[in-house]
Length: 126
Picture (cartoon, rainbow, N blue to C red):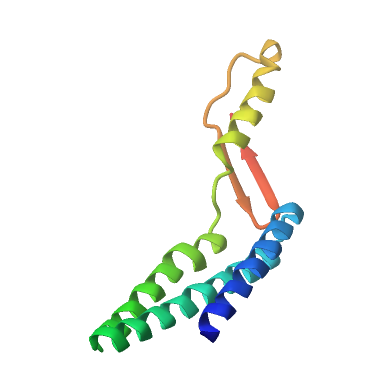
């Protein structure tokens, strides 16, 4: 029961911290929010595996659920914030509209790329 209560509290706290991180563009706060979210996953995973083992006695499911959660956290939550990523499609389209509003001053543009690294956002085009 305490696993569920802890998970519920961490869901609310992680959402508040994540919203603040997004508003301030803080990588450290986003990392903390994701850490809290991984605590939610692990708490629910432990509770689920204990419940399944108690109900049906399949002890092998406990380590399998743990391994699946570990891979999910690693691939979906841990690595992406550390890697550079392009801006969202909406942001890229907005930037392209701004560039195209100056089309009378140039011939054309190409090789448009964007990326964000922490709080910094980069735009590159020729």
